[in-house]
Length: 163
Image (cartoon, rainbow, N blue to C red; front, side, top):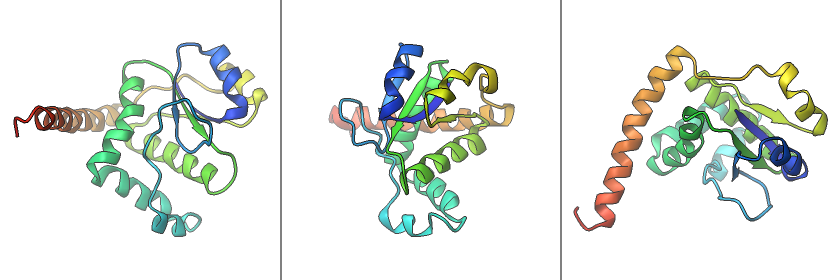
């Protein structure tokens, strides 16, 4: 399960899902690992014209570092763990989070949910069918896992002075 919410709803999320992995995406709240997935400033210019989703996806998957940050979300979901992304409510942060959810849904067929208030969380079982990767999404995930493994091994070898 992938949940996107703000700091005001975090306590409720943690009470409901005590084993959830929490990442700070755009929230000012400290104490959680920060995902370095924020788009470049020049990409935010296109935030509301429909091109942002495509340029953001391109930014994530053409850059090895941002790709590795994205895999911090995807790999736990693949391992059937729950992930929560903390955001700051308001623009451009909500639009960025919605775009990220669209990218994940488009690439992997995995549906996340944006929790705006405690009521949304209380209705999660009734209105949100537990998501899983689609069949085409699993094919894309296999390719991404291969790239991820290569990058992680390359990083390990470089840090150990083997390269």
